[in-house]
Image (cartoon, rainbow, N blue to C red; front, side, top):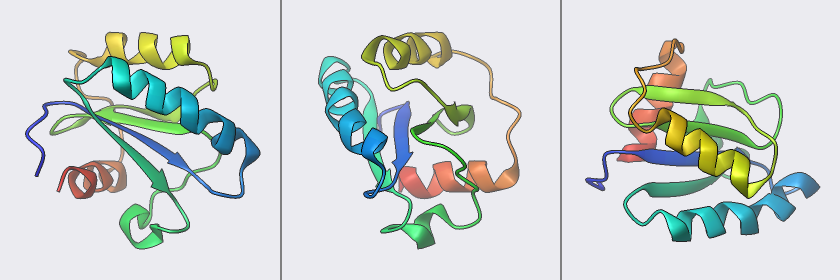
Length: 109
């Protein structure tokens, strides 16, 4: 398991044109935040990992350490993700369901 205290995961799909365009943005933000673990998750290729989490729109971002801090869809712009990370880096845990907490634990393994 990566010991980074914070994980930022993007839940997307290969067929989604917004996701394809967002991948470069996501990777760019990841390069600027080397102290954070970033993970790209194709919800269809890794369906078993995503399990019961319902991803309704793209890109959906999950931020957390041992507990989820944010889970939701964002605008596919680098400054939005950067601000989101800054706002949730030390935020209290979000009110998310057990499936999202379980997904975070699987992503951190």
